[in-house]
Image 1 (cartoon, one colour):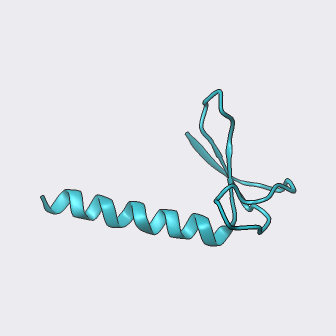
Image 2 (cartoon, helix red, strand yellow; image 1 turned 90 degrees about the horizontal axis):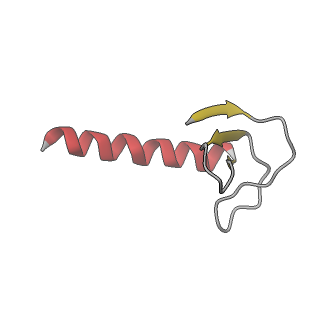
Length: 58
């Protein structure tokens, strides 16, 4: 996977969010890439950090 800043005019792929995307996550999947706005991307990043710290405590 790769994360890039996006200059394209796509809407955020997160359900309920209608903002323009600023990040593109290249998944390498046949289902296509994932586009996210900055707010949704930050929320996802924080959730991943939280989960990884919980895993390291176990």
